[in-house]
Length: 191
Image (tube, rainbow, N blue to C red):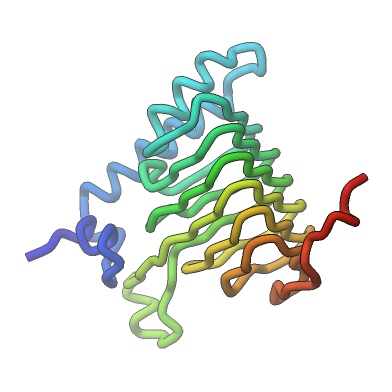
């Protein structure tokens, strides 16, 4: 019989508050986020150490501005040259993967959790999760929300305030709520 954590990791419905391991994992992530967010900017080495302890995998070069929060941390992987601006949240009940050279504006959220629409199931705290995959060279404007199961292709730009409900292909500018492809990125986009 699978534990609730094993169900969560394999994408099956699970009860996050019925498993002591998941409760402890979330508390550990909250403690590490609190420590990270409390450090002065001058303590870059300590900040890097905390993120490496919190995340499942990191590149060598990354910067995450406070305040940052996540559910578990170990389901987050970031590539090289990763930048996340202030006040971002990653709810990583499933894997959240960022490629290289990903830039994230302030107040963004990446949410893998899926809650039931049917009230009795929702009240019982049953949930599931789907992974989010962000490929390389992607830029998110401020206040973007990315929902469960989404993939954003290489080199794409997601406009500020967008709610990304479905996957976005590579090499496009996409905006809106729900987020839709506006156009392809071309040579004319060079400054």
